[in-house]
Each structure stands twice: as C-alpha cells, then as structure tokens.
Amino acid sequence: MDSANVLNKLLSPVIVTAALCCAQAGFAQQSTSPIRLNQVGFFPDAKKIAVLANNTASNEFYIISEKSKDTVYKGQLSAQIKSDYSSLTTKTADFSTVKKQGKYYMFIPGVGNSYTFSIDKNVLEDVSKSVMKGYYYQRAGMPLEEKYAGKWHRAAGYPDTKVLVHPSAAGKGRPAGFVISSPKGWFDAGDYNKYIINSGITVATLLSAYEDYPEYYKKLNLNLPESGNGLPDILNETLYNLDWMLTMQDPNDGGVYAKCTDADFNAMILPELATGTRYVVQKSTPAALDFAADMAYAARVFKAFEKQLPGYSDKCLAAAKSAWDWAEQHPDVYYDQNALNKNFDPDITTGGYGDKNIKDEWLWAATELLVTTKDKQYTKVFNERINDAVSIPGWSNVGMLAHYTILKNQDSGVFSAVVIDKVKSAAIAMADKLLESGNKAFATVMGQSKGDYNWGSNSVAGNQGILLLKVYAMTRDKKYLEGALANVDYLLGRNATGYCFITGAGTKPPLHPHHRPSEGDGIVEPVPGLVVGGPNPGMQDKSYYPFTEPETAYTDIAESYASNEIAINWNAPVVYLLNGVNFYY
Ligand code: 9MR
Image (cartoon, rainbow, N blue to C red; front, side, top):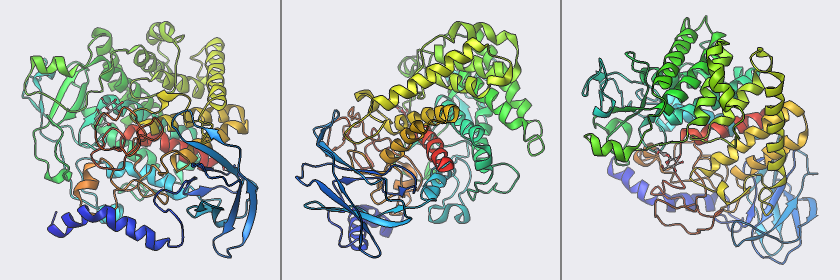
C-alpha cells in the first residue's frame, strides 16, 4: 500500500461520512437516523414497515415522493412497544398501501426525514446478485481481474500448491512435512484460512438455493471468469470451493483434514503479501461427515452437467463414500485445538470450528448418501438419528439440512410416508413458531430469543428466512413469505443498530468490516456483497462497542471480529433468502 492509500484508509471514516452528508444534504441525522427501514427498498406488493426507534411524542408519519415532494400517504404510528432485547422503545409505521414505483422518504414531525428508499419490482436485484458475487472476492489462489472485480481487483494470493502435512495430520503414505497441493477454495471469512466444517453448511446452502430455484439461477449472470460456460454461475462459484474440498481428502484412507491454514492469523494485509507456511491439520470425524454430505449432494446436482463436467459427479460420490467409510472406522475423532497444540508443533491458533456433538452430522451425511445412492447401508444410522430434534441450522448444527434434503426428495422412494410426514409437520410447526415469536419492536422474525443475537447473528436471520421460504414453497401460504421478507428488512436496515448489514448496499452499510482484503487494499469502500456478523453481546473481541445490549451490540470497526467480520457461512443463507424473495415477488 502506498502512503496516499494508507492516509486514505486512516481518513476513510471521515471522508465517507462527509461524502454521505454532502450527497444527501437536507436529510436529518444521516448517520444515526432513528427511522429504521429497509434501506434498499420495497416490492410494490409487499408489506412496508418502518420503525421509529426513539421516544418521540409524534403519532403521525408522512411518505413523501422524492421527486415531487408531495405527500403520497399519511399514516398513524403504532403505540409504543418496549423491545425485549434492548432498552429501546419503538413505534411502527405501516405504509403497505403505497404501491406506486418510485423513490420516497418518510417524514415524522419532530424527528425528520428517513433515508430515501425505492418501491420497485426489481428493488432487490442488485443486492441479491452482489451477495452471490461476494464469494468470487473470497477466492484463493487466483488473481481477481478488473473486468470481474472492478476496483477491488487484486493479485492472486495463497496458491496453496505447497501445503505441508502438519504432524497432527500425519498418516500412512503422508508423513509430517509431506507436501500436498490444496489450491482454490474460498477464504473462510476475514481470515485467509480454509475450513472443511464451515464449507459444509455453506456449500450445501448454495446447492440448495440452486436446487430450489434452478430456472432463476440459470438466468443469473454474475460476471465471473467462467460465466457463459454452460453452468449456472451459482454452481460455477460453488465448484471453486468443491474443487478445493476434494484436495482435502487423504487418498490413502479417505479421511478429511479439518483445515488448510496458516499457523496463526496474519496481519490485515492483502493475500498476495502473505508468505507463511500453510498446513493441513488433523483429520476429524465431523470434517469427514460434512465433506461426505456436501460431496453426496454435489454428486446429485452435478449429474445434470455431465456434458460440461464429465465424471465430476462420480468423483464427488466416490469421495463422499470413502469419507463416510473413514468416519465409520473413526467415529469419535474430534478437533480440539488445545489438545492438538499440547502434542504437536508448530502450534495452530487459527479458527477451531470444534464440534463435539456430531449426531446431527451423522444424520445429515447418512441422508445425503442415502438419497444419492439409495444404498441400504446408510439406513442404520439414518434410522437411529431421524427422530432427533432439529433447529435453525448453523455450522455446528446441521440436522435441519438433512430435513431439507428429505423435503426436496420426497419422491425419491427412499423415505417412508411416516418420515416425510413427520419432517413436513415439524418444518411447518417450526415456521409457525417463528412467525408467532420474534422481535415485536422491530417487527422481525429475527429475535425469537436473546440467543438469536450471537456470533454471526445475521446468519440466524438468514437461516430463519430459508426455513420460511421452504415452508412457503410447500404450503403457498403467504404469511411465510412475508415472514421471510421481514428478515430481509431486518438485514437491510430495520433493526436496532440502524445498519444495512451488507457491504456496499443501502445508505448506511458497514464501512470497516473485519476483512483482510478490505483493510489491506487501500480502497475506501470495502469489498461489496459481504454480510457482516451482526449484533453479538458476547463482544469476545473486547473492542469498542457504542451499544452493548443483545440487539445493539454491533460496532463497525475492523477490530471487531465478533460483530463485524464477514464469513462464507453468513453470506450463504442471505444469498438464499434475498434471491428467494426476489424470485417470488
Ligand atoms: O462463526 C464462528 C463462531 O460461531 C464461533 O463462536 C467463533 C469462535 O470460535 O468462531 C467463528 O468462526 C470464525 C472461525 O473460527 C475463523 N474464521 C472466522 C470465523 C468467523 O468469525
């Protein structure tokens, strides 16, 4: 980075705030507007709700056309609502009857104007694409050319063609120090490491987005280097990570390394400047099972693209089977980084993704293998686990992904009517529960309990949205679609922080995500299309948080890896959710 860029980076908050203020002069309180709404905008036929998040006495609001300055709607604010997750009290403003396409803002006497928003049929198109394109910017081992990456173009980094087998991962045929090649894949998050566990749910979520809306995704051009090659771009992008995952399997025994990593997190530099030794570390049972599940799923999806990718589907399936076999022979190998560091050198201090309850991983892998192969050998584990309770998924909680696969493959002949009925009614009951509870003060499904505001809370909002969309597809009852949209509104600004949580979107997006390329590139705007973690009262990074309650504990500073990092498993549910509602409305 040259000195001008360093200066830019230091000054960036000032410059951006100033630029925003100038660009939108005339609007009160640009940086912390108490009027919280979806900053990107609304579909003409959708519910439209804004929230006033302060104690103003006003009872009325006005929707004003930006162009003519005419009032197009005058409405009443609701009675005060005390939030369950912070000391805020709010009032809601419903202007769903305004349907005419155009640009508007809300005016509340005594408060001022909101940000400008659009009402438009295509209002979510750009942001939906951009969260998908976000993965391209996470690619390891290839240069991002300007024609695809715009001003965020960068040199290649982390080729990972010479990766050492860490002593914790040594095995027959591959002793410690053995060199393997493990190229491609996405950087996990703000860091440059590549983890199998987190790829597990991420890849499955993207495959499921494609499977649920194939015609939609076939038309979606993301301007990738591979665009136009006969594969939908969402699959082109997913392949980039699947190719890497395949290299993480030890051909000698089918076991899967937990991660391809530096020994320690490095500085906030561009990937091309990182030169540390890379390692594959310890194989683990959950890594093998997540890998098996993704590969068995990919084998189904890519079967339809035999012409473009001859043999790929079979290759995935063979990899899935041998990973499963390894897991059966090694059913309780967990990744415990502290234990690992006591026994082996060098110490590894990057992300752990340690998961010691892997009943859900067994269910998921068995389900995917069963659907793809129809082989009875997977039924024993399936039958043992199918009655386990499931909940909104996350990287360590993947049982629900098995349920989604059952719902999608009801006609496969693999599942009994009893199982299908149970899974269906459980999904509907969960969706109903989501609609009943939620954060009343902000009118969102997000906020079922305090626990929703955790590390990566925005992925909770996204994953709740996925369940609602899947139940909507099953029932066609609009209330589920509206619930999903309420979480879109949450992510795009109707929340207690006032931020739109996606870089480059809305009026007040994060400007300083914990993301090494965005910090290291000297460009003021962060890389676009990345979902930040969101409110997390755990505040494990101990950095400065202006507010610290469950729904407000978010801080837009690069140090805050616990609230402002980006991660592949947080983008994926938002990809599914945004593109899903974009498809339906
Ligand atoms: O998303 C993970 C979160 O659930 C954990 O609580 C946290 C601490 O173990 O780690 C998060 O994952 C991080 C990973 O370990 C390394 N890359 C960045 C991930 C997001 O912060």
